[in-house]
Length: 236
Image (tube, rainbow, N blue to C red):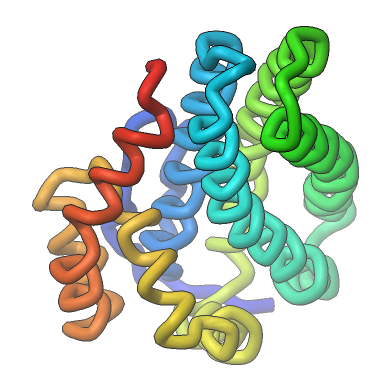
């Protein structure tokens, strides 16, 4: 069992349920959580307001959903395949109940997300008021389900992580699973997505951790991304 007395100042973003103290810097985790919450809120609000006959809007929303759903799927897969098993080996019986709930909640969220993707694809193909109404209901369900899960994770699972892991172990999992997937082409898409809407103070902290390369990508892509967001969510 890993023990340490070193605590890091944790990032706290709007909508975040908690930021438990501990040795592991959760900045990037919380940045992703914020993006997931932000996106599902926006989708749930814009879909019922978007005219079913606006083909350009539905095409843009379907493409934007792919940008949201791919990192969320990767995030959940990394937790289920690497993070939760690491913690389960070291956790108490009571803590294992919480960790098992994390994976179970993923299995409840994923079908909702798949149904939302299907609805957006159908609306991208043709106008249908009934499909839009059903999609609106599914998006609200997905938003609420993912929100509850992230709240649960931040409040109850992250304290377990902070008790059982060191920063070095956290970085090792990041190097093994997350970073190999981040190609330059993918970074051009994900950096402005993750950084969008944050204050300069938050971004300075993020880029201090991720390095000059990420800052340069953000500087090169931020205006184009913001313009695309305005077009995609034009009915908000």
